[in-house]
Length: 159
Image 1 (tube, rainbow, N blue to C red):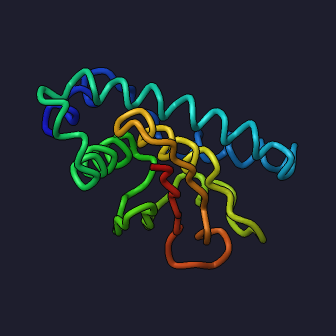
Image 2: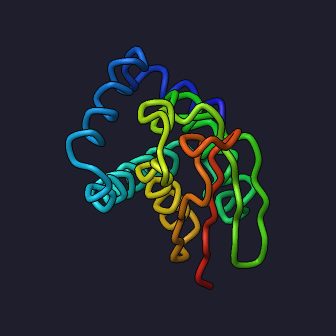
């Protein structure tokens, strides 16, 4: 995982969060929730790229078959890029539940009646699909923008 941290520090770009939050906030204001599909799709594409980066760094790809290890890599990726902090995850047979704090998407939008972290749910679903080889559908269940303490997600895994 240290190799992933080094890669992200060397290959990533450092941007203040506020311009990114403002950009995301304006997208929501101008388009409403009709853009959710586009944001989810964009997140999925980003997740595929992130998974390819992880796969290129991991020396023993067998370790990615363990979902806890894979989620450890996803945690490093999300935190080092400043997207959010992965606080908890629980892995069940065909489901993963996880919570994040500091989602840049929820912070950008502020108050909302619906969850707003579609790029994040798309990205995590694609990360998992690419790394473990099973179809994964990730959905945000509760969001910080709805007044929750953290954003909560559920991943359904097809075996």
